[in-house]
Length: 248
Image 1 (cartoon, rainbow, N blue to C red):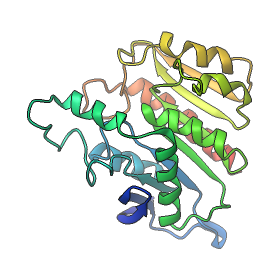
Image 2: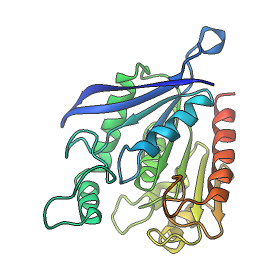
Image 3: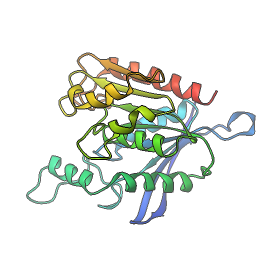
Image 4: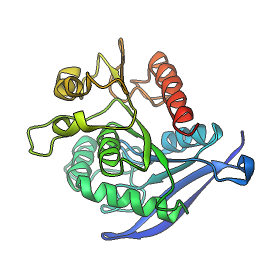
């Protein structure tokens, strides 16, 4: 299916924000709207690989909405095309971007992005996130449980910490289906770091955790050193099956 994308701008409580919106060029069947996917980026930001993944999802029959979570630092910044400030490495720059936003700000950005894309507040959605975006998926599912029909997190980060609002503490209350794709060779967020969350959701039949042997963090992105085709193929199949079921 052919797709088209546009960058639109909206306002947030913290200034203007760009939103990547990708959709099929065809009209949705039965005079309806294409089902909406809220995509939460990983730490490197919206870059060519993000555009490609959004287009792939759109080609499967979805309206894909991607808020630029780093807008508080600048418009459409990403770790590929943005030179770090003098005296800082790219990694330090990216960690600074992560530390500059809160869970509530990320969810606010998601709200504003959906609104800008024309997705009504009462329209059911699904959501997917990568790295820190997986934590945002969980927060969205817990906050909008009646609206979010399913969520997916690939090579997730920050699912368990020592704060009083750590995701793992409320994970047993998760009502909608969740799929997590994790590499057992993840050098950034190891399985051990997720274990409290994984233990919390283990009794839930609607949570699927798939562990891919040999996959490292960031396995999603073609051309990147950590790209892992087996993990991507498996995670894509499971995620799209979940989303199809959510809108059935």
